Image (tube, rainbow, N blue to C red; front, side, top):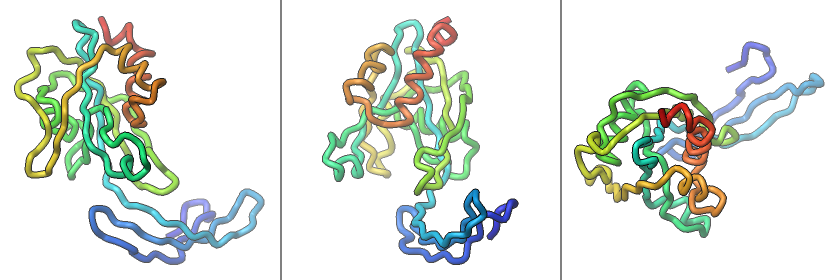
Length: 197
């Protein structure tokens, strides 16, 4: 496989693991800006696309977040229960359909108006996952069940509702350390006038 400019040529790929996600080792010839070719070795995790959403109740000035266990965080020696925005894999669905499903499963909120914001690679040096970011206004009438995730997937999700300013302050204190959540909270603070009206 070669890119359109001819600067990248994949010369080998080997699957190292194919469990929860696939891990591949690649060899590629890379032509740098000065025209010199280098043989590079990279290991890449193949993750399917995902979506995440910030739910905001303007009447109560509260964001709806979730708290759940994350093994990689635990293995890093950090507090393993992260406070995050609702999120999940697309599972072959359109991003908006997927995030509506995930928001309902995790928080119990039925979404009326969903707004696409942007998409981003969260760790482009090693992971193929592309995350679609959304926003939705909610109010208490939209909460039709308790959420908490799917029992068959062993999800043990706590729904956490916080004032926007308190959630934003938790970034600086380290109590919110999830990148997608940080990005959406900062977006909300910047766009507060537009989302509060």
